[in-house]
Image (cartoon, rainbow, N blue to C red; front, side, top):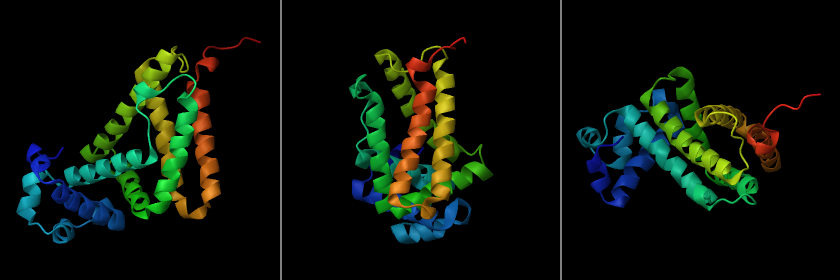
Length: 214
């Protein structure tokens, strides 16, 4: 995590640093990204950068977290506590569709996400990768627990296991979609997003809890 003093900077200054970092990581990927180019674009010194961030991984994770939070905000993601049994599944369908539209208007996010998946593949134990996964896992856990409260998510498996399998499907779908992003039209992306969510719904839905004997 950035050192607490980073959050004491003016908002515009923080935005400039993280935007410069996100652009560099999106353009070149994590390994090839240059800290020197980032500080040049942000207008700060290397000493200043390391005054606020522990290392390159910390900077990447911070830039990715900001980009993901912006995606959530722009896509209108609904807090778990605001979901009802009637709106639960359809809310996620709307959110996923909005996220596709956001990504189509922000190709830098697509390229940054591609950098994240490359890092996951080459260095799965990196602290940056774990931070991003933990951020997503926290949100998924809130949604699953809320769904169980509402009676729409199965309760016959431990919550940590439900979180893990949901993350696995989500990450596989996101990785595949990002890899093939330029191969599909807008409508095809929406079809794939719907199908992926349907897969997750079938896996988690309370109606499918238990085994039907012939």
